Amino acid sequence: MKKITTILLTLATTVACAQHDVKKGFKFAESQTEVLLKATADAQSKATKHNLVAPRTVDAQGNLVLIPSRDWVSGFFSGELWYLYEYTHNNKWLEAAKDFTAKIEPEQYNGDSHDVGFKVYTSIGNAYRLTNDAHDKDAIIKAAKTLSTRFNPAVSCIKSWDGIKKWPFPVIIDNMMNLELMFEATRLSGDSSFYKIAVTHANTTLKNHFRPDYSSYHVVDYDPATGEVRHRQTAQGFADESAWARGQAWGLYGFTMCYRETHDKKYLAQAEHIAQFILNNPTLPADKVPYWDFNAPGIPNEPRDASAAAVIASALYELSTYSANGKLYKTTADKIVNSLTTSYTAKPCESQGFILLHSTGHKPAKSEIDVPISYADYYYLEALIRQDRLAKKEPVVKR
Image (cartoon, rainbow, N blue to C red; front, side, top):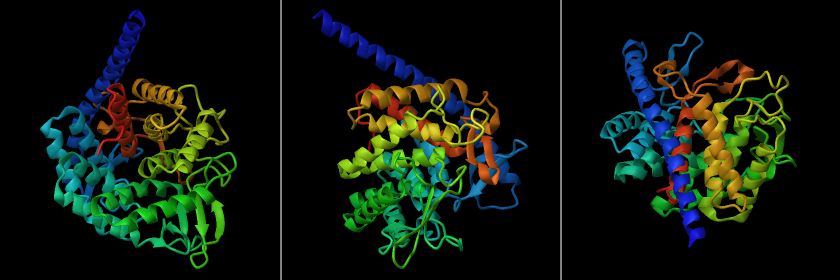
């Protein structure tokens, strides 16, 4: 009886600590997002372009950068608002989420972008999950049909970027994240073609994107007629053979999600291998927030990437529920979230209202280096929600 009592007290303490961390994180997120909403409204009123629908980052002068719906980052801010509503049940976040989500709806028809999954699923996908609105359900299915048009059966992948002469059919590791839209569309419509495309893309990526140590190339370029690999390289990492941090995060999250959707153990094994590469990497700092590239030449004098850390934490929380290494994954995710909360957050009411600082977007292009950025905030809030669900013994992913 004494042993049982001790276990119950330990569990209660764990839940209480997690809830305290989550409560603290969301309280700060709410106050910052109030600032960001006002800054966004002010910037929109002064903008010469009227199609700027969401905040993305701040520029070198500290000014808020707004983006149109076609930007791959456009859906993340609405997703943040949905997470705020989910956690707080406050209708002011519901109304704001609906408003910003409506502005992303044109992207369900945008066949020029492989990022329709990023844009639609983070915004409209969360909207449907929390409201069950039939209008959102229809948009998810239409977006999946749009994304399907970029699938090439010869390559067995969804094409990433258009218009790059040196890459006739590039596929980037980021594209794993767009597959969640396809799985959801099959669940909502009964049309298994979306599922088959997602699985085929995941299998091809597993085969061709990874090195023997399970680090990932950023870009694999294919011959669109034969499906043969032409080149393996990078666009946003340090070098073709380096491990771009956010790319490793996308792979970890993507294959964890694929295991959830298919129960295919090869996806679980791949996610575990990627996690091993990340967590055992000698350049991973003690606070578990990686440098922008695991092979960046100037470590430790290189920018960090809080966005990669947030994606990794969120993925590890989910992976912890499937793997025999679950305790390690959850402990590491807790460490990352604690690091982000204590050392990477903006000062109250500053940074235009973004939550996290110190993300790196595209260092080789000298773009968005050591800045706040909306997808970092999105995955940070997702990680907090997942931490809270685990503490409450709830499913880490809720539909």
